[in-house]
Image (tube, rainbow, N blue to C red; front, side, top):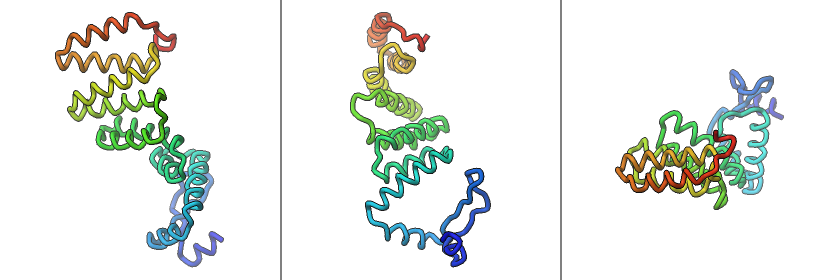
Amino acid sequence: ELDLLSAQELVELTPSSRFSGKRELKFRQAIVRDAAYEMLTDRDRSSGHRLAAEWLEHAGERDAMALGEHLERGGAQQKAARFWFQAAERALDAHDFTMALRLVDRARAGVTQGAASLGELALVEGEALRWKGDMSGAERCASEALAALVPGTVLWFVAAHALAALAGIAGDFRAAVVLRDRLFAITCDEGAA
């Protein structure tokens, strides 16, 4: 069937494939792709995105944004959140702070309240805000991360460090002392040592 579509010049083989041993096809014209997509029912479209995400993940897809997009469009918000978080971390590493913030927002949509991953998202958001010069926003995020993460874990200490540094930058040494006292009361997780 794919050979017939290729013969009719609706799809074409890409020069190379991202997946070893697999042929990769693409629509020759965006209008044909869009028309085919619009012919699907909402249910089929959603199912197709979930199946695409499963196949891509199994095939070794490394593009977290592509996986997040398919999962989100497939109605799998919680699973998509993991990939949006990965993409946000990569955007932060690439110094694309605006994109990191957008991706954190998308990840939050699939994370349950009280989940430790909310703390991880707050850390990424806070770091992006700090680099953008929004110190009060970064401090708010560090506080949120500290509240959401398990005390004594590595990430909890990362959040504590960020909060202490931001308090020092702001000249709020009282907050730094309160944080110091809280640090002394915490039992360190073995993995955090």
